[in-house]
Length: 218
Image (cartoon, rainbow, N blue to C red; front, side):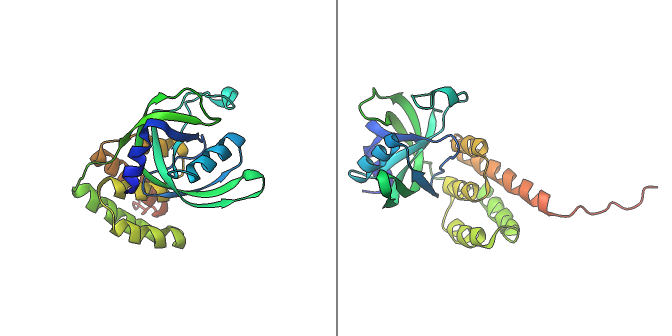
């Protein structure tokens, strides 16, 4: 089965890890340290089955009810556990590879300590357009200002990507703010997402380029 097929097979009861401080984007990899008992159980069960889990954001105001089941934002990212290390007391270090966006349709009644939901997988449609060329060119201009390890991994990956995957790879590498990442995750229109990420790259370039003096005023 492909990664997408594995997510689609899990869509009737996707295991969900709500994590307010981090947003996983498709085609990127996120390291996670799993220490809460309910999410240790989630990872243990995922590893024993399909290795599929989703990362979700919580709606604002989640803090007082975090130990319960505060409302989640409707767009999340499903991924595959591609590496795991079991630690003392059942904790885990994992690498989660983002596969595709999912829409949370219905949270399931509690049957496990962790949360599960019926979801709809939302793979990107094919897209080729001028937005891609403009984004690639802008990232090449930005690359000399990026940490070498970021540029060295981003540029080869970008060369193999197109459409929505290209936007997601670039966003995962350069966008740190969780709210901004969630906004890009929620953008299902591929041309708009490409343009939006291009705006992010443009802002980074503008902050790094010196201002040219305009000369004396007459």
